[in-house]
Amino acid sequence: MYTSDTPPARKRLIKYLVFKSVIDLLFVGGLAVGFYLDAFNPSLRGSLDEAGARGVAGWVVDKSNPAAHVEVQLYVNGRFVESRQADFGRADLVAAGVAE
Image 1 (tube, rainbow, N blue to C red):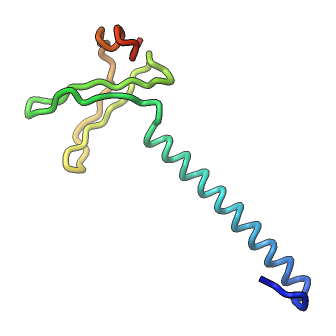
Image 2 (image 1 turned 180 degrees about the horizontal axis):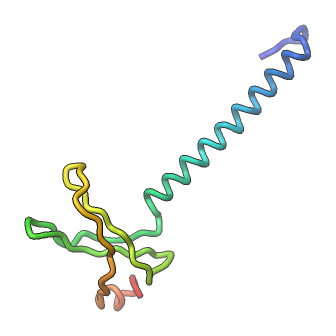
Image 3 (image 1 turned 45 degrees about the vertical axis):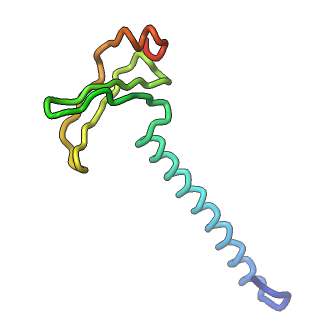
């Protein structure tokens, strides 16, 4: 990195740049984790029960808030088709302790 004959100003600049690089890495890493958790919520659980020409059916539960309604988006071949709230109660999921 630097030797004993490196000028002090250059040493300070190198230390500053290394420090800045570490701070930038932590900032960008934090943003990436935040966006990942926002896009792929780890507390969501669900299943696609049926899919066909007449429609799709399934369930989704937010384990951090089981009583909440969850927005579900349908994509077919990478194209957005529709967005709906998963807001219908399912007695089988309540009996299994998955939902409230």
